[in-house]
Length: 439
Image (cartoon, rainbow, N blue to C red; front, top):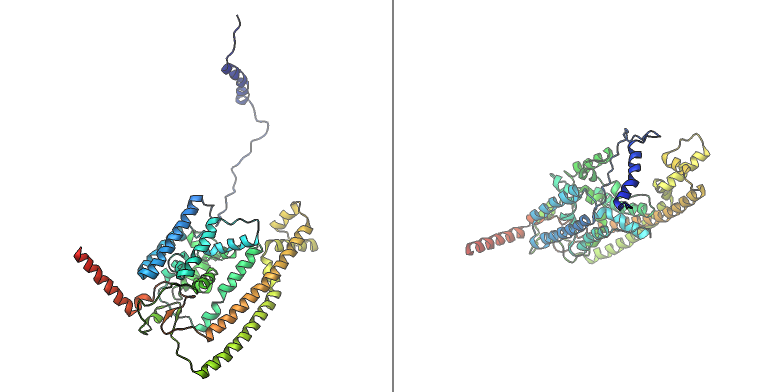
């Protein structure tokens, strides 16, 4: 009589020898030890976010911008703007650790335009564009109640002092220089200097390099007396917001009705962002103004030419921060003088299969890019200096005290000082009491 073995029995007979070999086998080589003294270093860059978090960030940004516009234009409430800025400080600052923000996303936009292989994340594009679109229609609502950096500086501003114009005007050129360097260094692959020089990210992430912590503390201490020093004299994104806000159709209005020329708003603004009324000029003054304008235009052309020249000779120094150019100079220095100590980057290059000629060719190409970019940067800065000079001598002003659409942060500090605003608030309170009594 023949006996057949089931399928499970066959599998058991096949697996049984393997089980015995595992149980009674001996190691032929020592097993590796993974317990070492190595500790994972702290990285300042946060981990990638999930798609849901990215969507939530954009939605929260859009809602916050909408609320800021409502509080500024419609409700005219300084307290509401302040509370919104505190929320933004907690959410975009400490909860989201300052990333991703419109200021840093400027670099993503530049890289997307300069590098065809780079694909910009959609949330970075939206977070970059939403504040600019809002500023184009309603002024700098982002600065007023959504930017965590602006909120941090508003929070520490205790005893504001006026910055003299002869100091404020030269300092106001720094954001333009910073914006130009941001574009130059991002386009050449040198680095994201806006994020590297962010003075508040160390506080938002509860850690960072000591020099950046000190850098941020200096801004906060200075911000006790100087209103928003980073926003006014450093922020590159503020340049773009100012350009958009200049053409805004709706903007923060100091008075809800008519200006009484009391000048209380001018004294209340710690940012020197209120235009004073101008007196009518005589025909003689008009002729003098025309001559002055002609002279300033000629001076502006000279500034542009000087900027181009300075840019053409400064590209060598600006390019030294680029890692490829720095590596090529290090490798060539080691080749020329064997006594020069190598670096980690040069050792990695020597151990790779890359040819030295390829490295030198890439470095030369980057130097040419830096030369072109530095000339354009010089022209840009020269033009800005000329326009700043024209703005100083031809200060804009209407019949009333008005917020400057470019420099105003729409913080609402000036509104409670307006007598007409007090009357408006009394009227609203009376109507509210009447509705409550009827109800």
